[in-house]
Amino acid sequence: MQNKQRQASRKKGWRTASTSDIHELYELSVQEPEAEVDFIDQVWKELRGRKASSIREDFCGTAIASMEWVKRRKTNFAWGVDLDPEVLDWGRARLPDRLTPAQAKRLTLIEGDVLKTKIDPVDSLLAMNFSYYIFKTQKDIKKYFKCAFAALKNDGLFMLDAYGGSDSFLEMEEDRDLDGFTYIWDQAYYNPINGDATNHIHFRFPDGTRIRRAFTYHWRLWTLPEIRELLLQVGFQKVHVYWEGTDEETGEGNDEWTITDRGEACPGWIAYIVAEK
Image 1 (cartoon, rainbow, N blue to C red):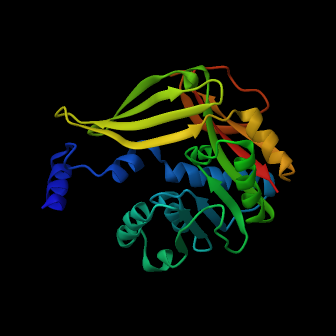
Image 2 (image 1 turned 90 degrees about the vertical axis):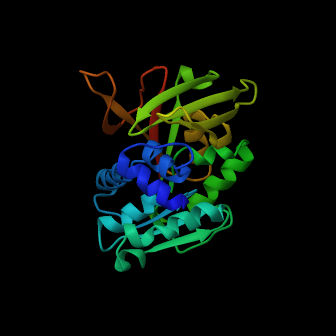
């Protein structure tokens, strides 16, 4: 009955808390897999002069980025790693609708700890959506960065994202209206002494219903200088920051990413970090 209700709500163009799936909402509000794969291709062309073929997506969740990767080219292979069996099962259940059988054969989903999972070396390892912020001490995050280094081929690239800006240190909420629901980013707690942060994602619907704390994150809010220095300390040869350009008409990001040593001191930003082995 619940599945039929979800299908009916989509056909009518509206959503409610009871008929919505939090993983689907997360994909719609947070992830842009095509843009992410475009970025991987851009970086490999710029830094290595070729295309990558293998990626490992750590903290992969529903593995939508890995799915997009194997769809992009017949020579592409992906491994997704996550500790949560429920979200991996959610992703696996949707493979027949999202991938052809040939594409699905080139995707492997692994329930495991990113610190312990070992596969053959890959061209790129991804740690997106700030997932590695779960490591709250230099000792722990360096251990993860060392694992990432070891998981790459000799010319491999480690790709991460980061967020910051003056607003990131505030306890505040930010709303964003999407197709049939509102995404709410809730910075519920921040401790400036140790960098600990607790963030929630809530969803609100046109009928007034809500899903509160659909996702909760207990992180350390790492800064770009810290991340760059730690990556170099574990052995990466170069660490680049890709900063997004600004649309002159809207003042918003233009989805064009370039390497730079100088960013804008704005209230909020998201950047990519690329470490060369």
